[in-house]
Length: 166
Image (cartoon, rainbow, N blue to C red):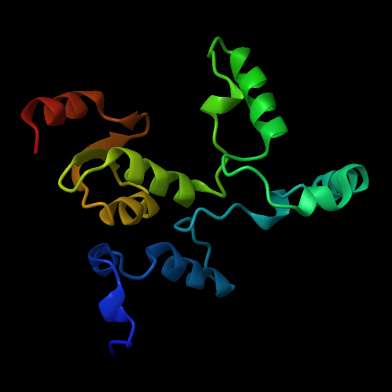
C-alpha cells in the first residue's frame, strides 16, 4: 500500500527496498539459530567491564561536554590518535584525512556518494557483503562478481574481469 508521502520520495528511494541486514538480524532472536549473516560478534567477547571503565573515565573527566554534539568528521582527539598510530606503519596521514563513522553502513554509503555515478561498475568478491550491495544500489551501481577462495579474491579471475569488463 502506498502512503500519502511516497510520491514525494526521491526516485532513488524506490531502489532501496527493505534492509536485507535487518531481515537477517530478525533470525538472531531465535535461540536455535547461529547466524553469521548479520556480522554480529558473539556477545561474550564484548569487554563490557572495560567499556564501563572507559565511559566512567570520559564522564568524570569531560562531564557534559562528552555528551555534546561534535565535529561531523568525528572526535578530533580520536582522529589525531588514529593518524599517529597509522604513521607507525609508514602511512602518512593527518587527522584531516580521517573520518569516523557510526559503522560500516555509513562508511559504505559515503563511498557510494563520493565515488559512484549511476551505471558505474564495482568489482565485488563472491560471496560479498549484502550491506555493501544495498548501500551502493541506491547510487545505481552495477557489479562484476569475482570468485573468492580461502585466500580471498581469486587474482587471476580479477585480472580477467578487469580485462574483459562487464
